[in-house]
Amino acid sequence: MSRIYSRIVGTGSYLPAKLVTNDDLAKTMDTSDEWISARTGIRQRYIAEPDQTSSDLAFEAAKNALVSAGKSASDVDLILVATSTPDFVFPSTACLLQKKLGVHGCAAFDLQAVCSGFVYALATADKFIRSGQHKCALVVGAEVFSRILDWNDRGTAVLFGDGAGAVVLTADSTPGILGSVLHADGAYSDILSVPGNVCGGKVIGSPFLQMDGQAVFKFAVRVLDEAARETLDQCGLTIADIDWLIPHQANVRILEATAKRLGMDSSKVIITVDRHGNTSAASVPLALDVAVRDGRVRPGHKVMLEGVGGGFTWGAALVQM
Ligand code: UT7
Image (cartoon, rainbow, N blue to C red; front, side, top):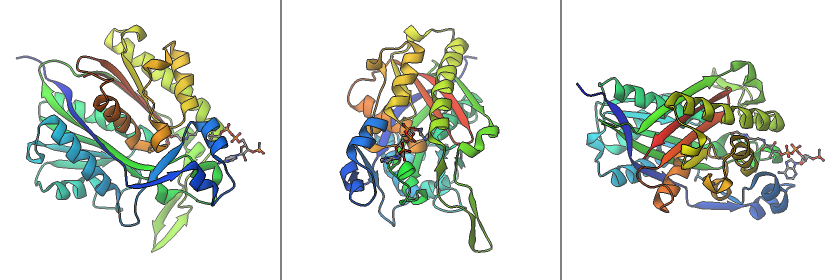
């Protein structure tokens, strides 16, 4: 019997309509387009309407991915949503997405690995498909980080935006996901967190994102380098085999430093953070979808997807499109 692999057969993404530029932010807080652009590369972000939830954004991205895959929602037998900003405590955003897609019965669950969430979800879906028990997975990263930002904290509020990205992953006799690695180290939980919860009808702790920016920066560059190399080793490939590098879109300086450490030309790095800020679990599938649609990422290309974020969590997946 031939082996089962998984392949990405469609991509999709969605950004809310409301565009907020750096100059817009400078009207309400002590910041400037000059500071934000120079330190992060971010020029603008999109913010969901108050009644727009992660599952709404996920629904739009999922529909786009299904159309690009030539699949209908009824073909899907596994829905995985990576999010740290779910609609509710429960039911999961994946179940709410399933309802919006109008399908019933397939497995659906959320995965929480913050900005590594999509890479974690993709690696998980790959293993479900390789098991032979699932044939068509919808893997989504969807976030409304605008809800967990302290808009009085210029050190964090300017960095993030809302959005969603999705892929359709199907069983195939030739490999699409060539290899993947996942890691976490809870010892670093303090450097990026939303240290609050709901208890007895009240928020206990803080409902806002807090971060040691410089510690996160250094950690991210180191582990993005290590995860890419480990994944290549697993696949028996080298950096020269990578057509495109798509790391988590947090900061252009992190992306450039990662490419430099890997010895890759910066022209091989897909950068979209300038257009939508850090969208956490949505950032990698958003960037992949942009690069597929603008023709840079083409069938046969090898693409290194990388996540890093709160937990701390990190991981990579090498994908042949
Ligand atoms: O998914 C992972 C999420 N997190 C990240 O990716 C963040 C990683 N870290 C970073 O990207 C960078 O550390 C930041 C962009 C967050 C900060 O850049 P930095 O070069 O490390 O700046 P800094 O924190 O050292 O701050 C430098 C100065 C400070 O002023 P003083 O103390 O030098 O007078 C800050 O108060 O910049 C000030 N500052 C700002 N000024 C204008 C901080 N935020 C702002 C702002 N506008 N928005």
